[in-house]
Length: 184
Image (cartoon, rainbow, N blue to C red; front, side, top):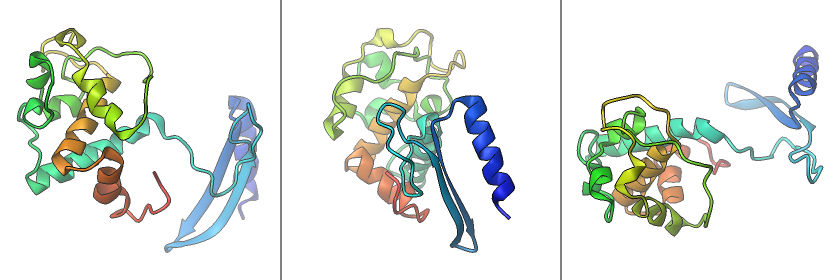
């Protein structure tokens, strides 16, 4: 039965200050149990449903890496070539960084503040072309340093190599093949 799992979810939510959770158990491709707990936003108190979409945060990096490597397999993106070959308008030092360095956090990019500004499809390219060489704090390949900007730049490379907006590229390269038709 799922009662013990539900009790543990409620206990963990309370202990961790988690406002809401959706539980869906799939067996042999069929939903066998679904239940929602709490609220999607503590500001609005909108209840979570089993169809609520949740922000994945850094888990998104797995999807970005998969999309990039699918493009490498297709021959439209190079793992070890300068990213500037695909993304136009980058500062010279940034243009020399490779996809592999971006995906492995060894590009030498400094971590920055949370993303601000426009969130439309054109914002991705304009954001990375706005960076100067000072965005690098170390030479590429020199150190490991977890940096979200590396995945922002990898996302721009995906959009350019796929010749479509990032969201459409992610949908066609990762989400649809994985059967994730309600993900975004």
